[in-house]
Image 1 (cartoon, one colour):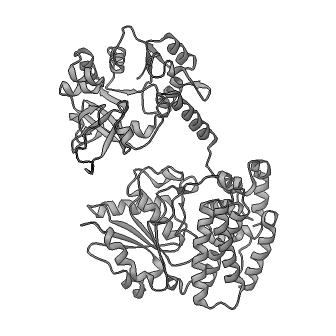
Image 2: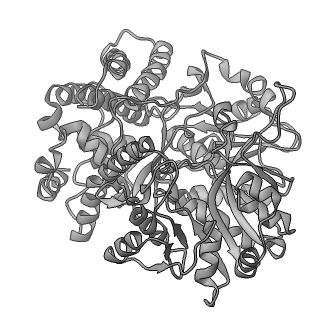
Image 3: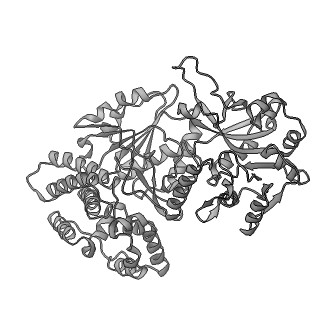
Length: 604
């Protein structure tokens, strides 16, 4: 039920204001409907204007018979003779109401104390004192089980000691009532506290009802002022265009990094301040190190720490992440102190994904995309044992899911700590060394030639590009120097694409990987070998490197593909819109057609 009053003291007629071509109230109705959480969705209003507008857009509306002081009263009148169990109140001025917030509220009725709950609602953490002291912002205090104790327009609790560590919560306008509790509210008179604060939830508390609160830090936009409406129109426009702000990228960097031969021995002193009582560190280690006691002994496991060997023979998968997370939760009572990944790009990506999924619900596949992660990841540390992928510094963890290969790209993905010890890359097989090194080289080429390039990404890309030429074409470097320089090239290449983007080779190699299981580094080399049309001079240089190191680039991978395989490969490649936009520009779809991609894949 969406109560909708035409009059509003701060912004009269706000629910009929235009938001992306539709009135605010229609946007709110559609947002609630699209969650698919409800048997029915209605707008309940005292306004014929609002009623007619909702009906005109195919929605369900109910006219109030009586005048009402609150949205709850208006809803109660509407549902009095309906056969319903749970009634949810969504505020009409919240057109960005999310499924996540509504699910959090509804899930409380499935929890262990569900029988005690008369009403469930939502709150969000607030920190700005201006907002905390704003009487238009309703605050709530809760007990240790998150049952509401009181709501107020004043700052509660009042911080007599200004240094007191207090978490403030803002009450968000989503309620879920048991019908009988709602009808009690409707029939009981307003008492003094509700009358003083003008907060209807207080009536429930005054009559002994239990209100359970869920926490959500998803920030929507409430339309309270004309300025809010301007912000909402801008947000809707960006959402509809699927915009990623490529001009101003406010992305996090790895906050701590140690570099140098032997730096791996600092691992335990680095982990020590992060270790929590009874909570283990989980070490995900490439299974090539099984039996390598020299490295394993240097990890120096403590207390109930656990070492898990993981195969990197195949690209990381969402189902693999989910299984690791499930096993960790089943074995340990306490959430781990952190995740430490020791290996190449695949192991580092798995470690980042596991750290995210230990604090976020659902499957890893739910978070494949840009900025879908809501909760901060578990503390995680990356220790690369091969250089070139840039996984140690990147904002993404690339995973193959049930329907796509795509990264979990979020502010919570980057490692909290990275240890760069060139000695750990000793003994890497020559082909693997070359393929991952070329992954770095291709990162630089695609970043430096892309439309998203800026001075920040350019400075990193140029340094990595020069290092790659030195490493793979200069015969005077010692192995020790080469290892250190490639580790730095990997870091700089990863930073360059973090603040711009990759391009054609990566988009097409994702298709190879998803359909044929081709490893990322070698897949990039297979594709790049045929990209003279896009990166002519750099492909010539790449082929010079291939010849110098006597590397055989696989041929004929795609010659026996079925039409279904080819179509899937093309679908995967085309889905990576930001990569194509960076490589070619806004008109990329006129250049990269399905026929064009099929022709290019057949060359491989």
